[in-house]
Image (tube, rainbow, N blue to C red; front, side, top):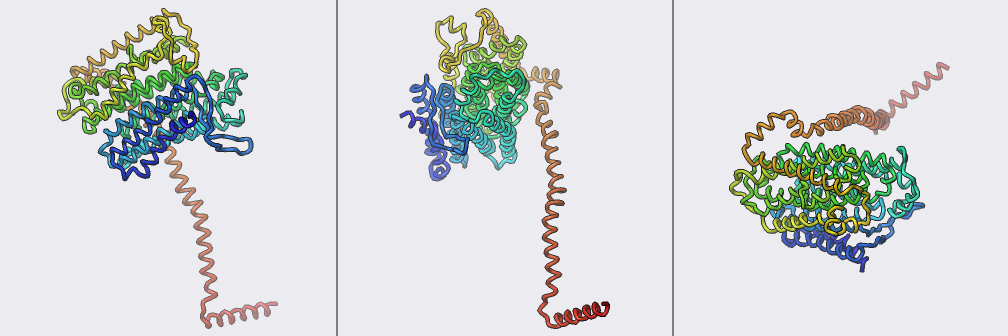
Length: 625
């Protein structure tokens, strides 16, 4: 029975993809959307059954033999354990709600069935990635989600900018993927296997690398791959432009699928990273820098989806900081809570955009609180959770990461707390500009139930999921276990006194609430105050609004330089040298054939003349002798 459930969980979205691609055009939109949504929901139910049956065991199941060449053997096998089951539930659960939401959001799109086919394929590839029992199969899913992101970000490819954004996401991820596959090659050369269980066994007796050795190279290459998929410095630039796709796609990418892949991969290979402290420190630095930079950029963005996009980059930075601190349980906990409230926020933004006839500029919105009450309350729940305001989900997961940061260094705690304040400010700025003030569009209305029901369900999840991972002081206070850590089986290495934890939690929560209140008052009231504040910090505002010119820097240093070199090689090497040689050989052959063809003209008088000329030359030669 368990093997059937595994097949159903993995292949149900792929079956939905096949139906949409081959039969979707012949089905009504209602049937097409229902089939696609059911395909993912069935996968969720199968994952749920697997969870209840195997939540305390770990095993691998081989679907079929894949590669068996010499010393290299890789099966198409899946790994069922606490980590994969958690990700399966998150991916299929959140994706089901996004599929249902999409039936309303995309109803008028002429490529409706193609959209749902791509969406189903995206979920299948993500499941392949998280259920893989070896690095080679993980890489298939890794590349698969990259392909699907290209297809969905550039879904409206008739628009040149949207097509460009799809290509940008694809190309930037190829850079990280190149490093990722180099890491896989090095792992096989060092250990002779790519299976996770064998790799774990091989590292049991290894001591941590004090310097930067081969294992550090491996983990660094894998982390570079993660910076691509999970949008960290320097490869984060594709994710904000991923907003060019339909809003439900943004929710799927940011909450349940692609961007969580890098964090999951590091947690899956935690036994490697525990042996490479230098790389762990690099991960902390990159994660922290990304969290702060993207938080600063989000402060001034006008596009509601761009704010949420940079917010995702920032929250992923939190997860990487936790992973670098070896707080893998905290990283996965924040990944789980973030999936709920970030999906909620993106779908709320989609509801707003739907009501505003495609408008995404928050400064052209306002006053939607009364005309869109369900969307407003849902966005408020998501904003409170994202800010880390108790007792919502983000509070528990973010506070856990801050506690680990303080245990490492008070400076690191200060930086993570500062990022939390940035988060609170920009999300309540977005809330105020969108929903408070005067009504900016008298024709705005609440979205249909196919869109609002998922918002309500995600709001409930956002309110409740945080209680699965209560911090130690809450666990002791209420005499309950941390169910999340107990399920994953990762014992917490955090050792802070109760007084310290209460102080840190209280201080950060108070500052976050104060920041949220300040942002609400500032952006809900007189816009003259906003203008005055903008003028006061005009230089910083310009830097933030223009994303610190990182894209322009990349364009100047990498894109234009590469274009100039490509232009040189095309004109000088390709056309002049290569084409010159090929065309020269052809011209030589053609000219020789023309010359030799004069000998065979078919005219008798020419042959007689040639014979006469030949006789004269022979006579001259003989006379000379």
